[in-house]
Image: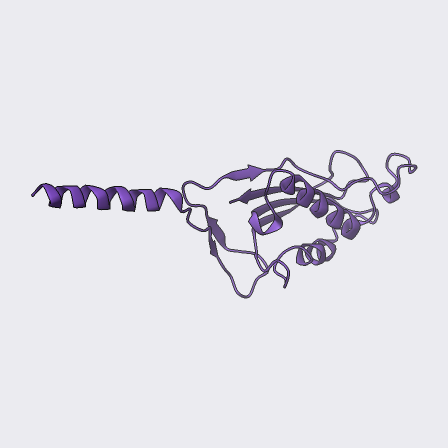
Length: 161
């Protein structure tokens, strides 16, 4: 009887330790026809990192405020912003494969149009490709303007591991 109870207790301890030491993977709910996910389930125990809204680095520091060459066009700003996200999360031990959500704000360019295709092209260079096959859940929102008149793109990212 003592041996049976001891074996049961040992088995319970072993299996409870196994569950605590292994983290479950994110569950990415795919939409095969889309470049973004339908949703993501983040299991208990994952470490989550949120960035603030990030914008691209200045491309032309000599350009006056309001000059669109200061940060570049929508594509250039999208690439620059995604690079800043990459740098920010890598500094905390994450990588772009850990990103599972983006909130994207796009503002109109000089002609008053939002260049959605420029953003979608830049997104495809960081996600849902051969190097990083992961898709993310994402909101892409057109806004009247951002904090500075020459800013066209701002992105928030959430990563988990």
